[in-house]
Every structure is written in structure tokens, then in C-alpha cells.
Image (tube, rainbow, N blue to C red):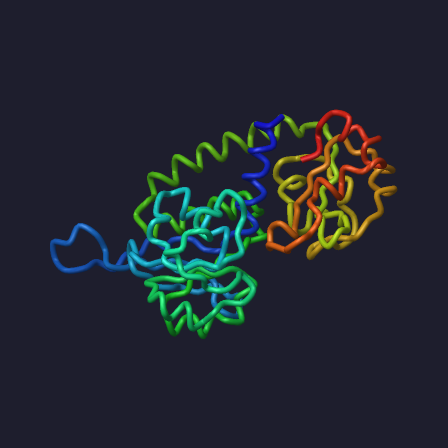
Length: 294
């Protein structure tokens, strides 16, 4: 069960969250005889959330990170040592970056410290959707790669596409290809587990439990992994629909998947998802009895 949990957490976190970009295949070569380009052109988003072609330096030495999904990918392809500044919003397995005193504090994934970003003199900046309004200001400092999930192709394909985009910036295409193959193998294993099973997908926030459908966060569980999502009704594309635990019990789920939003955004003093969800009511469900709450 721990192995399944680790795989699912990887799929969900990588997320959180990722980009709507891909390499165009256009490289701008350096001087004659150079073995590497000086820049590459990728497809990303601008401040109006429109696709745009962006020229970025090839294999940049100084990275400013204001998006955890981008940091996750950068860490996995082995270029995390280039991070000179980052948002202090973090998650456990990436906390060694936020705790590194040599990496400058750039604010949060919701509000960047523009002056701090300038001071760390980045060659490239990565942001997520919460900072789209700051795109133009940040673009005055360095090229801004704005990553967001492309719902038209689904979370899994979007994640893989964006991993390849980031890898192309650093010349790490081979490394990411190996990881893509591993990722696909894990997704296929999860599909086998999910076949014929139902699940309730939710999010804890400020002490409450919100049910999530197949139209937003964690939609991977129903759309791509293949669980029959018992909450896939109505519009749940933002923070989901708040539900009582009596409702959870009535749905009688075989699996319960929970995203801890407070932990994800670093809310101090918030109750954990485990504390909120594993109550006496939920303990009567097949999900709890079979150790299927993740």
C-alpha cells in the first residue's frame, strides 16, 4: 500500500500543477563551430494566458522559481543546483530548496517579491497561474516561462509535455525521456488497480472536506487513472464542493483520495488531512477498513 501511495502522490503533486508549453524545435545557434545553441524557442503562456513563442537562454545558469511544479521537474532532471531564488511556499520532498540559506526568498507562489527577484539576477524565471498578473513586471527582469495545465489534453499528457519543454531548455531531453517512460509505466499500473473500483476524491481546506469531480484539481484520478469518481457531478473545478462526512459515508467509497490544501500552501497551524478525514464516521467506510485512504 505504501508503494501505491507514493506513486499516487507523485502523480498528484507533479503536479499541481504544470505547463501548457512545448518546444518548437527552433534553436538559435551561437558562433560558428559552437556545439550548443545560445538560446531555444519554446511555446508557453503570456500574462493574458495566451500561448506565445518565447526565446530563452539555452542551459541557463541562474534560475528563479515561483512555481512548485516547475521546481519538481527541474529537481528531477538534475539541474536544481542552478536555482538561485524561489518562492518559500514548499512541500516536504522539495523543502531542501526552501531551507537552503543560499537560495534567495522570492516571496510566495501567490505574491512574488519583485525586488528580491531582481536582486538574484536570474537568467530565466518560472511562474504558475497565480502569478500571471505579475508576468509583465517579471518579464522586465528575465524571460518568464509561465506553466499551466492544459485541460484539453489532460493532466498526465500535459505534465509529460511540460517536462519535455523544461528539459529542452537545459539539454536534458534524454534524462526526461527515461523519466517519462517510468511515469507511463506507473500510470498503467495504477489503471490496473483502478479498473472496476470506485473512489471519492476530495480536498481538505480550513478544516472542511470538499469533494472534487473530474473537471479540475485531481481530475487525474477519474479521467486518466480510471477510478469511478463518486463525486463527478456538478461544477467542482475550483476548490470543489464542501460536503459533510455523512455524505462521504453515504457514498460508501472503496477508495478515498485527499489533497491537503493547507499543507500545500503552508497554512500555519492547520489540521492535517488525516486528522480531518479519519473520523468515526469515515471509519465505517470500505476505504478506511481496507486501508485505502490516501
